[in-house]
Image 1 (tube, helix red, strand yellow):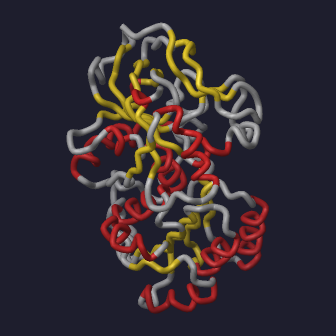
Image 2 (tube, one colour; image 1 turned 60 degrees about the horizontal axis):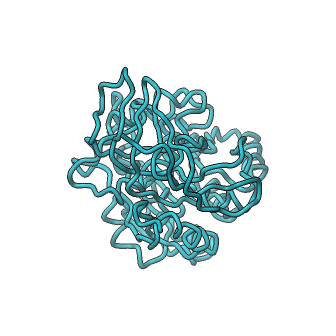
Length: 362
């Protein structure tokens, strides 16, 4: 049986820093939920910015337990759960709910929103998946979602052949989101797949499916000039902005996109700028489709996609269809998360995911 209290990293009130507590209540799973004893938790940019900017409009209750991505061992199952059992190794996406958050020793999650970890994947690797992968796929495969360009998912008819040979351009390929954007584009047959990143990540990104890696330090004019040779003259049908904070990249990608093509950006800090690009395109009659991706299966229109994804993730990982982020493990468990968040805010994380081991919390 799980204990009644636990260690947790909380934010006591809006704009306050993280605080490690030892007497936070352990949640009880409902009939369709599981209780997971967390082994590894990953740090995402949103985890770093929530305490700095008052919850980013995502937090409704204080104190708040931070953390979205985690992996661990099922400790208890609800009375109606048959898909997983006590002792199973699983990973999941917590969301903005204290009971489900991952910066604590125990969390609950709906049984249909956990995936079993195959033997070829570690807890640390599994903890890198959920949020960043969801950020990519909700923007491209959520056929019922309001923020999707609605590409045909790979499990549907023609989903792996419809886009074969079409050119794709992915900004920020070295980011965790960018790595999954490359892999999803490869799954669907896009080619060439051009991405911008630091040259030191070239070999790794090519192993994920990128055909060309362009130095992210080049100017927009230099990148634009290089594209025709890289695409072999093909029009670019799909652009994924995996960074969301660079207007020059967004304008470059939107301009390079062929009429009727699909443009996805991740939670842009400048939504008005994206709206202006849309209006500009509409006036020209270009028919470019735009989505502002938000990595959640719980918003209206994304639930069906969540069911599809969690039903396939274990098999995809086992077969190597999807590859996890590379990992840097930080010391001191929950007590090491602030140091990791500081690295994220300073832009000192590149090409990998920061992960902590919950059991190492002092």
